[in-house]
Image 1: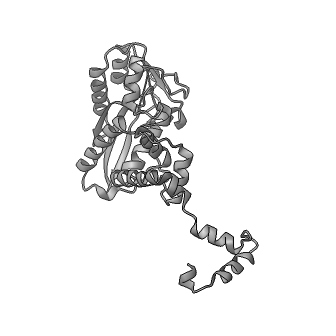
Image 2: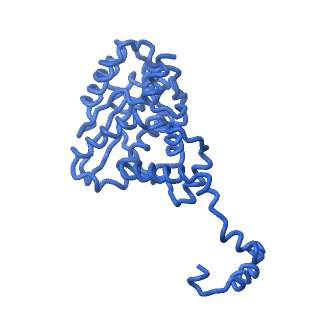
Image 3: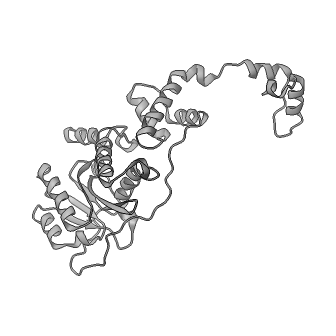
Length: 293
């Protein structure tokens, strides 16, 4: 900057020292700071290069990742570095995670049917010690250029893994029942499982409630108009849409392309995406570890 402006060192120091908001420096201080090696580059040069690689790779696939996710990946690769250092290095590199704007979620609530409303057995205690103790489900809508697609997944409260899911052009009972059938095929001993939802009309339907009852599954529902009671599902949908949909709608030319992208994301989420709450394991790794513990 000094060379570009054609200023002498004496003039630069004079400008700095006349500014009360800046610290007073001497000529030796100036040259010491000017010639000093970047400590971060010396101490963390290899990490800085890897952070940039990870950031670019994930950003090109989905959206820019935050420092927590990058820290998890570095730990899995054997780097000994804490998240605060990663956060500081990323800010220095001008790398920031994507921040999602608040959106209005899809709701399938159409009123309460007498005798079909169940109590809230979860009470926002979403975590389960072992798989198949607590399941959660909901439906979310993707609006692609006026055309709509609906995702209905089941999330396990232990590893936060997606147990089963169904993608449909219509949020009807068939979608929810197909999702249930897929889940029951691979998970058969479910007596005592708590299955939590909001008060959507599908979950009040007698066919849905019958399938749960004959397997000894206890049905749980959020309180009316209380979305935090369904916080685990809201969180999952928020992460999914932030990372592969919002702001990226132009990537998809059709609902078929979007559907394939959702399927790929769910597979990657289950098998690749680590979490702090899961001790930096992926959902499937945590589920499998819990089953053998």
